[in-house]
Structure formats: C-alpha cells, structure tokens
Image 1 (cartoon, one colour):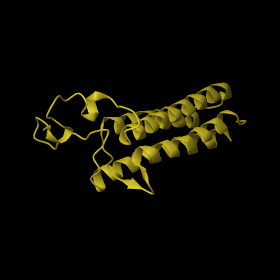
Image 2: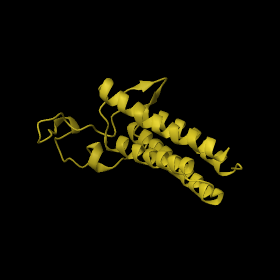
Image 3: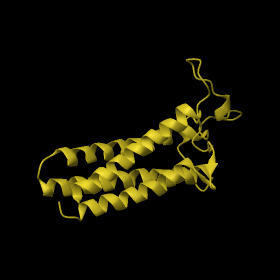
Image 4: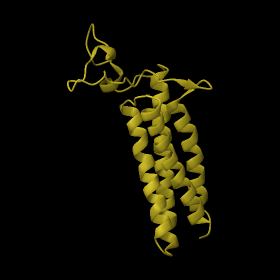
Length: 158
C-alpha cells in the first residue's frame, strides 16, 4: 500500500507539472515567477515517489520519504495559497514580480525583456480563472489532495 499510494501521489505531482506545461505552451498562459516556484516541490515529490517505487524493501526509509513527499506537496500548496492572496490583493507579493518595486510611472507591462521577448508576467495578475479560482488556487487544492495521499502512504503498511 505504501508504494501504491506513493506512486499515485508522485504521479499526481508529475501530472500537475505536465498540466502547467500544457497551459503554458498549448494555451499561451505564460507563468510568472511564483508559478515556477510552485512547480519545484512537485518535481521533488515526483522524484520521491520514484525513489520509493524503485528502492527495494526498506520500509522505514520509504515511510520517511513519504513524509518528505507530504512536505513537498504541502509546500507547493502553501505557495499556491500565498500566490492566490497576491493575485487577489489580500497581501503584498514579492516586489520582484508584482511591480511594486518598479518605481513611479512604471508598471509590469511597460518592462521589456532585453532579449526581445514579451514583457514579464506579473505575479499579482491572474492569467485566468476556472470556476472562480485561478491556477494557483487550483494548484493549492490539488496539492492538498496529494498531501493526503502522501500521509496515507506514510501511515500504511508496505
């Protein structure tokens, strides 16, 4: 059961990253800095899931890794909640990606990438919503489901 739930949770994190790529490359929803921050823990959780599946025996190690998977999923959920709050103007976000540190007369849309690309994506601007929730909100919700799977994996027999 531990390996099964770990594999499911790890694949869930992989699905989240692949889904983000689909929205980015297929639908043109460019990610901001905090969007990328939410992906890193998913990659860690996926790697942890792979380790649990491929390492033989070692139930104590598997349990410890499952708890790390839960921590990774909780981390991305937390970043998603924070990002949602920044988008909804409930609290300030990092000045590096919200435009608050740009100075007078400038906004995020007026910046131009020196390589000739598009203007940077601001973290306090939602790329869109589905059922009244933005992408970071959905990431937080699905990541909390993954936390539950990881905890279930950590508390189940091998």
